[in-house]
Image 1 (cartoon, rainbow, N blue to C red):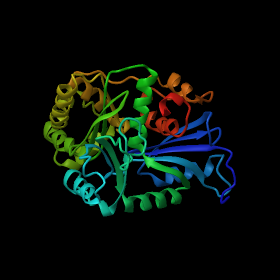
Image 2 (tube, helix red, strand yellow):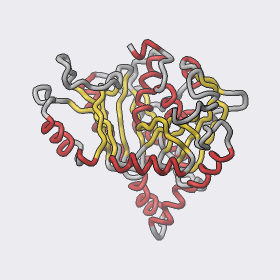
Image 3 (spheres, one colour):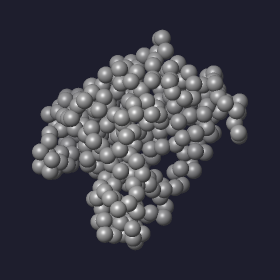
Image 4 (cartoon, rainbow, N blue to C red):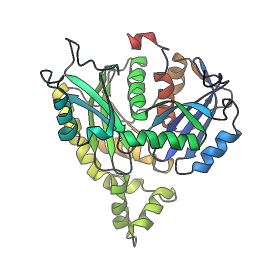
Length: 347
């Protein structure tokens, strides 16, 4: 073996704004979470410093971790296939370039089944019409791995955090025996990735070219600030209560979402049960309730601990999830997706 066995396990979710880390009792389930740490993704030195002082690293000095990443140009799209053409490579190239607007030769792409996340088999006689295309720019894979190594993290597993979160929501809905679909929003700087998920998998996916940066000019205008830079600093600072102007800030995003939701409800006859916003910086966590209020749908309030215990994950004494528990959902979904704790979900 290249590396000796490690005494601890680590799991890290590297988002656009925050890096969340769990130090675990051991590398494999059952897990006891011994420490949870949140650091700004922009502060490389803070992460390196934490890794250096933490115990349980491998003999190489690296924290060997399962890592969830959220590259800006990630691809997570459900698409209806033409089964007569699905074995033709030219057809898939057409889908990538015309439907997804990406250059396939510059991407690492995988096709999955949207119901359970298993690999899509193009050769199967009973191939499904629906596939979930997942990927990221190939150069991002190398850049992210290099950066993690420079910070002291050895990524034993590197996966799109979006996929783990989608799987986590499906798992949670099954655990709660809930049939109500969830609208998941990953609100990024320039893009919002939106999904509608039920207990049977991913029903709809849609990237919307509107994110936090589109709200900054609105802040500037509403508050009469001299430039966008001042507006951006104030918006992220957590020193001003923006909730009163929340509906104005999310107006553009809301319009796009309402068309997706309307289409889904007409197609399926089902209404959205909950809204769940992830990947927001803590200073903008109020945007989740603003989106829910504007859509007239309640936020998804998770009962995390019973769900985690069902997956052989417990918190050590003194470790808490804090007041906004949902912020840790993506990190724990990475751990849940990594094991066969609930066999029924793998059948």
